[in-house]
Length: 161
Image (cartoon, rainbow, N blue to C red; front, side, top):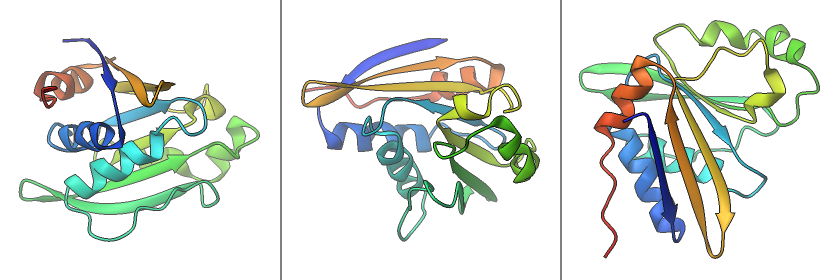
């Protein structure tokens, strides 16, 4: 499966998608999150990290630009780096901050506002687009690499009642 769209009727459905993604991720995965302010990018990331075993707060990296977390995937400890590039004024800031080194094939990198660092940002394996729709959100997931395809193929979304 290369492409998936669904409607998330409420916050618990967004959390369920995050949990489903946590069960499907692999080291080296790069996820780009797209959507307006308030579309649920950080909420989705928070749910993914908590479902992957992170205990404690998941802060929005709006001011710090990146927040690192360590999770267990199988028997391995994996770094997840959550980026929020909203406050960047140019792609050069991404390079100057040394963020490109985090995209090393081992870390899982989740990037909010990726368009702020184009064209120097490494390409995603998975694009996730969120948009507000009524009381919920519409989400589109698109695999752009073999690793992204593996993630989407493993994704088991909860069934709606």
